[in-house]
Length: 597
Image (cartoon, rainbow, N blue to C red; front, side, top):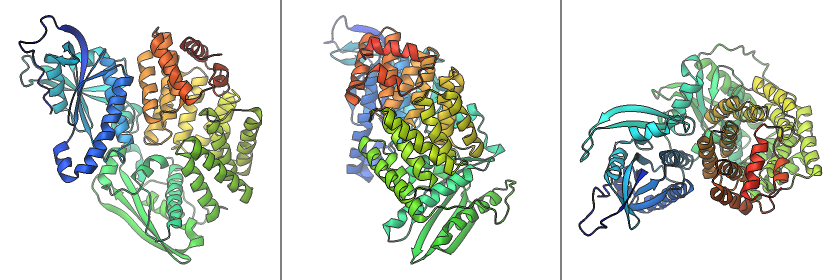
């Protein structure tokens, strides 16, 4: 705990210092001294990243840093809601960027009370209480006082757990303390909270994460085989209705990291972990796989497969069968009747490379993904996923504002999406890839709804499907259902590089409900995860304009123009369903913010 020593003023201080009500937030890196001793240079580099994230969110939430002391920050905010929103987003971003931040964890304490400001610094009992709360918080956690809880309850998507009245050092009266957790997100506490609210009980089904398979070969080209095997196992297990399967993009955040299986279980909220490796020897390939109980560490099943490279897909089927049988789920699996695949290793490699480039979600990487997709279509015109990938990439170039959505481009997106679905009517990715432009570019939500429902029937763990179904419900005027579906999508894929789309959906749904504090919270979280996505700023601008804060609205609009210099309301309307009940209010707010028609 850092004691900022701000309990009172000295004799030489101002006679009439300014006193005001403020929310005080204190942050501190857990185990900082130990980390510095173990790796000083690495810890300092990670600390710089953590401090940058923290300071950025403080500024975004109208806060001000009053003092810093090494690894600690003291900040004040005009409201408890601003401080709580800031703290929740900081903890979420640190989990999302845990690899870059070397796993550094913050403890955060927040109190609402009177402070005294002098020469930019703050003093008072409220500061000391916040510092004591920080010391009580768990690493990666947030502890708040009863005053904060009473002020914020119901305003933000957060849950409070009482840890009772506590006597704090040098504080006369006991303080009621609560642990604070976001209701949805990637932190372990948020995942547990989501499971509770969404009824994702592990007792009624099997929850599993498939970790990226290791490439033990010297040939780096086989990295794509290892990744592709992992992705296909996730897909096959996702089709089993009794399974809760963590999606591909989240588990790939563990790629290249040495991590304990029990830690994976805690962080992702799963009972089982499947891991393995591949090693190639000429035309032969050896695949090892093992299923582990994340709670006990017990190895429930392990197998080694020596096969010809051409038999790779048969091995995938064997692994899926073994996992299903070992977890004792009753399944009807007919030997020899696995779905016949026409995919070649060349196709598989192109698809893996294309999606890998796509999920960088920058203009340059999306262009590179488009190049790969066009090569895929040219070489394998009868491959469904080639056309799906091309349509998927082009669609995202448009909605992210990277490329004008001309009629010719929209026609190409629809043509490629339809061709992918024609070639494989039972591919959930083909179904949602056609649904996306139907919803957003063509404003035909009912047709999109039918396609997405079919996709989720095929794959009940399809995170993208739930997210898009949330967007459809938003367009159809059902914001509460949109929120529920977006939360399911986040639960299934909490560390997805494109999860900011889901948080933008949560912001839009709350804007539709006129829940302004929640709108700004989720919009800011989307910004924190993807700072160059125009819609997050647009939602903030419209929300600020609606509550009369035109200065903040114009500031958000400025960020839109930095990302998208020729942005207009008309161009935005060509990207999202104008039939949505909230669109007119959204457009009015943007106009007040300075976005031209």
